[in-house]
Each structure stands twice: as structure tokens, then as C-alpha cells.
Length: 344
Image: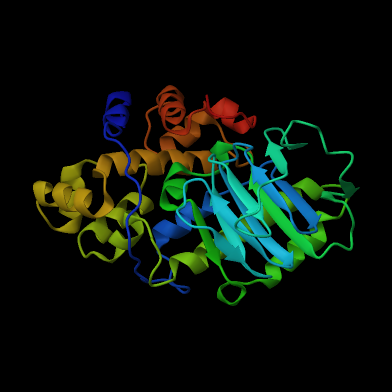
């Protein structure tokens, strides 16, 4: 694919989320598209905290992280997200997925005002700015005033925006909660046991556990009939758009045009363009551009990967074209992404 064609495949914007959900083919009800998007989640330097708390307690998290997971290991709590209309209760074993960078509050009661703030850089302060990291330290990744206090909150944060695809983040509501019966809650107990360890390679272990947690929770959430699933997920069930989506996912390096996709789906170019935009919420070439960059982000992490080779695999003529598209859609260059940089 030429540089001009690669750039031309990226001209239209990306859409947000839509209501409803479908379960389609696959051993666990996931579509290939969902599997691909979830497969792109890969934490680097994810932060875990285990907080031991006594009521009244409240923590306002305003660290700018793109995504976090939180669960009550002991006791109950509430989540108040700045972009959600109502607080949500957390019982032991429940898990909440919280979309950033908007702030949110975790507290023992919906009316409790936060006494602690979590700032960028993993800094814990009082509301007036007093650093509390040393005073509240209770051990490895654990903080509080007494290990015997009745509530234990476990949280894990993705720190880098490049670790998660924009398509995944756009698919999520500000806060979603699954109760313990809806997902593999035993996984959280495994994470809780690992969080307090200080062993060689522990950060790598925790990063992969954070990814596993996210995938486990989102698989369960997308399978709910009432889930506010994204349009690209629901569109997999359409006999025309579903075919086009599978073609894009299976052959991302092909020099696709709307006409070629329409031929593959057995409809006219105008019909596919209209139907794709109606069901997915964006034009086919815009969807393809984002999918190529999400795939490139994953391939670039592979041992021995080069920018040029990855560019050719995902449909760009050279590394320069891929770098320009990557910067525009991910907010960082491929080099900065691999180095762990944040978006500009």
C-alpha cells in the first residue's frame, strides 16, 4: 500500500459507544473483534494498591490514569465517578472498572467526603496537600493506619494511555461494576496474594495479572444482554457489516478500499458505506486505520520487530507512514510508545 493510500485510509473520525449487546460465534461468546481488541491490552508499570481502612473513609483518585480496576476484599464501599450520574455500591468480590482520566471517589458511604487524594506519580496526600505516603505505609504496596481495620480495598491502574487501544476505552462507560457471581472472583484473590510480595520480576507478574483481570471482567460484561456494548461489537452479527469487519481483522495488511470490502460482502459500495457507518458509527476506512494502529502497537512489542516490517504487515508502505499514523491516533510516536511515554 502506498503512503498516500495509507494516509487516505484514515481521514474520518472515530465514534463513541452505543447501547445493546449481541453474543455471536466463538467458544465463549466473544467475537473475533472483541478478542483482538482485548488482546491489545498490555500494562507496563501498572500500579497496584492494597488499602486497609476504617470508616469513615474516602479516597479521591485524580492521577490521570486511563483505566483502573477496584475491588473490596473485605467490607463494602461505594464508587462515585465524576462522569457517572449515581454512586455504585461494591460488595466483597465485586469489581469496578473505572475509565479515566476523569477523577472518581472510593468511599465507605456515598455521602463521605474524601480525606485522601491520589495524585499523578502515585502520590498520596491529604486534601490540604500533606504527603501521607510514609505515615500510612503498612508494607509492600499496602497502606492504612492499622492492618486490622475492617475494610480492605484493592486497586490496579494502567498508567500509560498507549497500553490500551482507543477503541477499547471508547467502548467503556465511565464506571461498570460486576458482582462476584458474574466473573471469576477467585482471580482477585490471586492478585491480592501477589500484590504484597516483593520478589524479583514482581512488576512483570503484576502487569500480566492486571491484563488478565481486565480481560476477565470485560468478557463477562460484554456477555451481559443489557451491556452497553460498542457498535463494532454488535455489528458482528450483521450479515453484511459482520463480513466486512472480519475481512478487515483477518487481512489488515491488504490494500482495502470500500469497493473491495463491498465486493467481499456481496453488496454495492454505497450500500456497504452507508450500512457500515450506521451500525459501527464510523466509515470503514476510519475503522481500518484505528485497527491497524492497535495491531501495530501489539506487533512492535514482539522480539526482533522492526518498524518497517510491522508497517508492511499492517498495510503501510514504510515506517514513516506508520509513525505518522501512530502518532496521530495514539498520541505518541512508536519509539516513545515502546519507551513507555505518555501521549502529548
